[in-house]
Structures are given as structure tokens and as C-alpha cells.
Length: 175
Image (cartoon, rainbow, N blue to C red; front, side, top):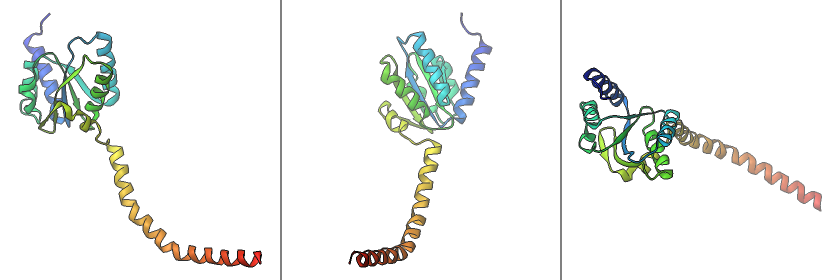
């Protein structure tokens, strides 16, 4: 049964709202995918914090119009599932990329990152972006390294003196 005009407007508004706040978006063709596989994909998407929705292409084009993902409009052709990353730019790429490795029926067609259209081959690069927690820990490691080096440098003369005295003691005990 088809959707009435109000339902179509509601779907377009929902997808548009998500697209307006999303960091990245991926469109993947799901032709030939079984219902159980699609359910598993939706489950993985929920775990990864990814908004996943199958939308008619005309509604999807209307939904992304006026957002940063308007560049995807011409590429929305065929049966597509749209995945939007809300918190982590690489979340959708990780979820769909991992699923596509195990299921050849899911083919990634279009990738967009903050208003820029990328190729489908860029999914690996997008998926390898660190999460927010990983990026913070990397930054903290970089910030902490100079302080640690300073402390080691300041402690080294005392440690060298202690090692020298210990070597003299051991030499006297051996004699």
C-alpha cells in the first residue's frame, strides 16, 4: 500500500532533520539482500549510533535538499538505504563497510562527508577515522609526551649518580 501525502511529508521531514545534524552520509544499494540480513544491518547500525533508513529516492532528494548532503541528490538512484552518522563521522562507514565485507549484496554507491561528495572507494578511509574518544586519547598522549620527557631529563643526572655509586659499591665488594 502506498503512502499518502502526509506520510511522505513526515518521512521527508524526519530524514531532513537527521541530515541537517549528521556529520557523514552513505547510500548503499541493498538489491537482493534478505530480510534477516537487513534486520541484522539495522541492529548493527543502532549499536553504532547510525541512523539507517530506506527511503524512496524522490523523498530522499527532497529531504537532503538544503542540507550539507545536497550533493548526494543526483547519485540517489536505485534501491538505496541511507545511513547517517550523527556523532562520529566514520560510524556509518564502519557499520556499512563491515557489513558489506560479509555480504556482497550490499554495494556502497555514494558517500558524503560534511557537504563533500566522496567516491565509494573512500569508505575505508572514512571508516578508519578515529572516534571522539580515540582522538582525545591521541591528543592527550601528544600533550603528555613533552612533560614526561622533561621529567626523565631532570631525573637522569640523579639516576646516573646512583648507578655510579652502586657500581663502585659492587666493585669494592667484589675485591
